[in-house]
Image 1: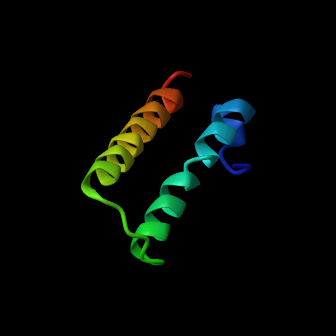
Image 2: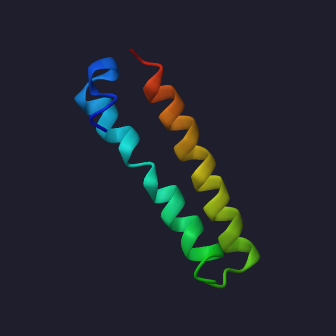
Length: 62
């Protein structure tokens, strides 16, 4: 977060640092072995796609 601050600003770098929710979600599923059914996995993957698209748009706003 602090490394990217001079390039994109404090607000954008903080928002981009919140992308770790993707790794924690996938880590819980694959590393810890949480069981999810098909409907839940579709919701998780669509949410991850929305988060990634929003972070790309946020990074390109400046």
